[in-house]
Image 1 (tube, rainbow, N blue to C red):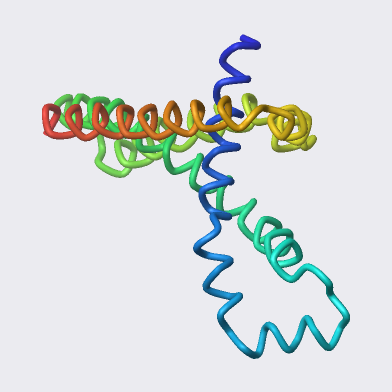
Image 2: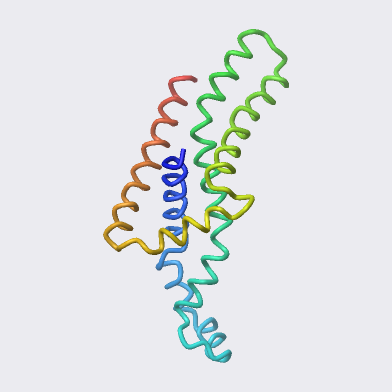
Amino acid sequence: MKGITYFWNKIFYNIWQFNCSYPFIKYFLKKKRIQEFYRKRGVANIQDTLFEAVSYVMLPFSFYTMLLISGIIMLPIGIYVLRMLISYKINKIISIISFVLIVALPSSIINEYLLSWWNDGFLVYFKMFEKDSEKEKQKWKYITFFTVTFLLGISICLFFILL
């Protein structure tokens, strides 16, 4: 289970890094008002300060991105169960509630358990990932990209197969 937790946190870390990417900060650095704002306050390194501010804002967005990814992974399973419930002539409201529970509940439990949202357990992993070499970070960026692409592709294929 440690390996799965490590892997999921590594993917979360890379999604967070992507959300805090340099082009986003570069956009703000071009704004004259922002540069004047930080100069008036005596900030020496505007780029680092902006990265810190953006990373603080992007952390919840990254959590919701991970929740969305795991929800999309659970979507074909939910569609399959929904189709089975409707085919057995079960009430449509009960079927829709079952669908939401089958998609939303497991995806939130997966993220709660693997990312340890409730006690900031992901921060331990973040500190560990910050110490990785640039080569290791680059390798995990590719792994994250291909993992997310693969999982979304499989989910989309299953979605169309089950419709």
